[in-house]
Amino acid sequence: MFNYLFAAFTRYTLHLLSSPPRTLTGACRLLGRMERAVVRCLPGDPKLTISFTLDGSYKQMLRDRDEPLGKVLTRISNSMVKRKGKAKKLKKNKGQQPCEATEPTVVKLYYDGDEVLDTVLNSEAWQDGAVLQVGDMKYSVHRNAPTFTTAELPVSMLAGFPVCPKLEVEFGNLQDCEFTWYKENTGNTSRVHIPSNQDIGCRLKLCCIPKDGSRSGLIKELISAEAVEAGPGVCTFDNRHLYTVKEAEWPTVRVVSYNILADIYAQTELSKTVLYPYCAPYALQLDYRQNLIKKELAGYNADIICLQEVDKGVFVDSLTPALDAFSLDGVFRIKEKQFEGLATFYRRSKFRLLSCHDIVLSEALISDPIHSELLERVSANSALKDRVLQRSTSLQVSVLEDLNKPDRRVCVANIHLYWHPKGGNVRLVQMGVALQHLNRVISEVAPGAPLVFCGDFNSSPNSGVFQLVTEAVVPQQHADWSSSGPEESCNMELLSTFPPLLSACSQPAYTNYVGGFHGCLDYIFIQPDSMQVEQMIPLPSHQEVTAYEALPSIAHPSDHIALICDLRWRP
Image (cartoon, rainbow, N blue to C red; front, side):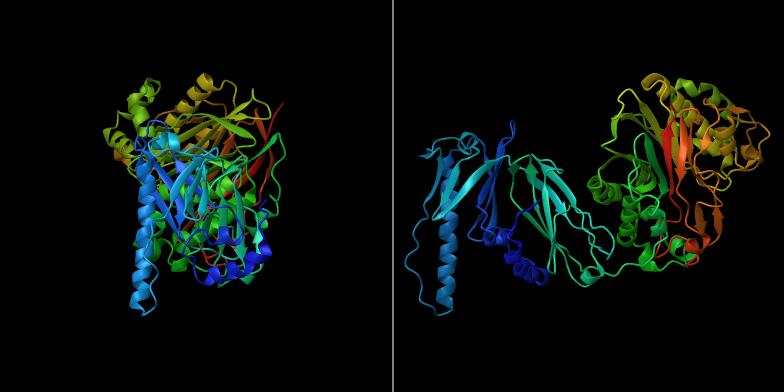
């Protein structure tokens, strides 16, 4: 992808790994790349920026669009005079012979071989293909060239785990950009790099060229802040990856549902001392867990991923850039009053996002007329109604179009129901609202589309929620209606708006395993008349799960276990 003079670059790179570069242009000069001046000038913006390297340091000038060119050129010339003056003073202080009197540096701009007049306004003067001359230096001008507005490496890097930079590009396309990793004597041209055990103790460098087709911008060099550390060895998901080495072949779709444990919950004193006291403190740190989560998700080669307990910062800074590098796009729904929420990712080569129909269940219950009957029945018990309305539980709904067969769509739902052990009645009401909403979305937006309903339902197989989904009805005598005591009891028959759904991964012994509890709480529900299960990826063995007593651990990033299955549309 890159055609760098790698042999010449290796020695330079080794130096950089022990001492970060003073400028971003050292590599460019060594490689003989032409110096550039990048101009950002957008319609309607009163300012423009001019970026280039001047006498060994990066310079960015913010100027008015309507300012005459001459003022900018004079500013650059004066800057050079000041630099020469400082250098002259420094020599004098060191007892060296000072240079001759400082002469103004000639600064001019040319276009098509002709000098651009000083009176021409900046917005017209700085054209693509112009040449800026600063003394003996010449710069090719690139107007609105592809530019990285964000370029960051993660702080924590583990041997054997993918390192995915966070990148955002303006006037370009990430899929066109070029990347080269440097470490020791090896160059890698992939956007994602997996350090080896030989890299432990070394820092990494990434050189990126922003591009849009054949157009390219200024090279960006990133040096990792920390050295590569040793990984945890065998993880709970390594054996599962043996079943997902390749992507599922169309028309099969691989679906993942996973509660990844929000950092805001993992870092509480309750978590450290009561919930997960067996887990090494460093293994609860977000940077460490993110390494495991990214490797685990990447190895599943999934087409649809539904995640719960996703910190907003994790979605933006970690998951989105990582999964984008593996060809997945995502959408996020924050939970009201919280800093975490739901995320749904989909493989962009197979699906296109048509629309989103997210709701807050409590708000929908009181504001949407389709829930009026359920609201009336819940309102018969004010204590239960208040408890339901206090919850910020959200439902994320994404309608996807199959790119291989554009007339085919799928409705992907993602949810994380109320967590309290005695909240079965609240969860039943929440599920009633969710199913009603999903039925309307499919009817109005994607008639005939199958439903794939993923999430952490916080409900065991003998719960009212599981019965409602898989049998389409919950009788008024079900124990969950009185789960929080007689004061919040609400005995009623609740019907589903869907025929019985199937749990695609059946009913595992557990999907959540902590020191004081284990049970099956997570599911991927499908409509069996529309989709069939081709393959369920086996869960980790009990020995793997309990290798470090319980979850999370140094080998597993969450207290939940991901569910993975391959689904096929029925004819």
